[in-house]
Image (tube, rainbow, N blue to C red; front, side, top):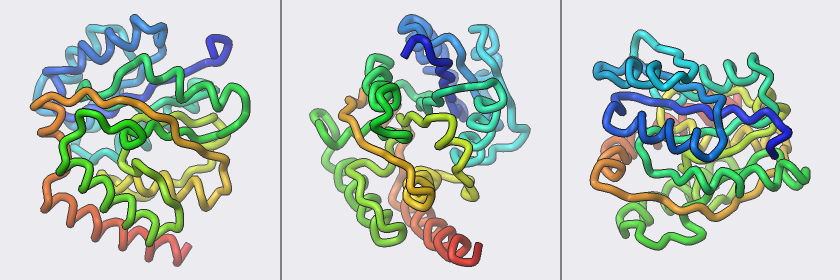
Length: 229
């Protein structure tokens, strides 16, 4: 995949504790075109990212994960990316896993690849497994696509797939919306196993029960909006 232009999109909101390590880890693995979306952070996330020589885009106000991904993906397409990778800023992803996502796109087996933590969930807390399973069921019931890890933040898209996606959500529900857009546009997709690096910090960035309920309501609203388009 080295002959293709891979752009990594990193949405970041108040991630000063991990953003430098994430950027340097990606660069050490050969990924040098990085876009960090500073999503209205109130800490030094943007400043630290800029010092690492990445492309930094800033939202004045916090728009949410969906808004940050939308900004980053659009920017990557304008840069001429052939493949776009989304990568969380909290340190839970292993840069080594990116090559697993790129391989199916390289051989044209898929246009969208989801890195699934649930295919090998060693070390994943039980509560996190249950939350993921519920999200998978909701995604299936609303959008008709079954995935083992609908909420994964580690994904890869061909430029064609990314350009065809119409993201209307702004929060964490965007992960399910990406699955919905993949199905709607009849894009070839597959899952590959990836590992998650769980720390107290990365676990604290996950959805709480109340946020999960809000996400569910937003997904239902998104389903209604899609039916009207």
